[in-house]
Length: 196
Image 1 (cartoon, rainbow, N blue to C red):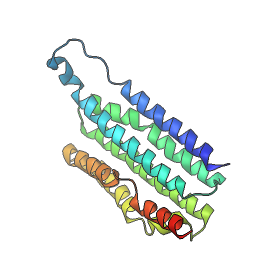
Image 2 (tube, one colour):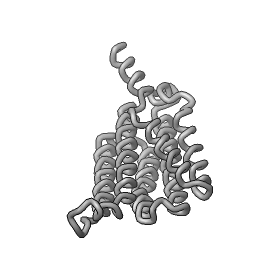
Image 3 (cartoon, one colour):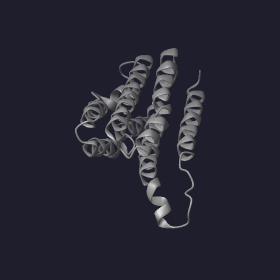
Image 4 (cartoon, one colour):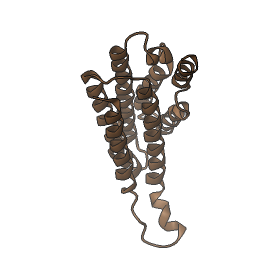
């Protein structure tokens, strides 16, 4: 399979995930600002989800840009990632509807942890397919940023039962860490194009 089919399929799934979440924003009954107040937690959780999906989409694009071919292992790893990302609207909506209470916030962290782990597995599958000297292997190196994200998600899931706002701050912090596309990949791809 050519990687363009994998990218198109993934793009479609991520677009549907965002669409599902925006449908959770119910139109308020009333025309004043007071009518919007009960929707604030759902809206805030939607914003966080939107950024997370955007971050995954952007970095997924950059990661696949380094691949030349797609193996069965890559296909399954990609589906695994999309599975966990598809659960984000559910846990995000649950967290927003319950005003960021402990259990929904913790489950949100578990899904983020699994999505982060699935992203790491996809990177490993691409490296296994492309070889240890591949562009992706050169770009991510020891992948401190990816591994740190997974550890922070696990930590914040437990912290949600102690202080939900600390857990939420970690979720936002990890999102900010990934907000700019992975420059490691951009540098390696740019260096390859300028040397050829």
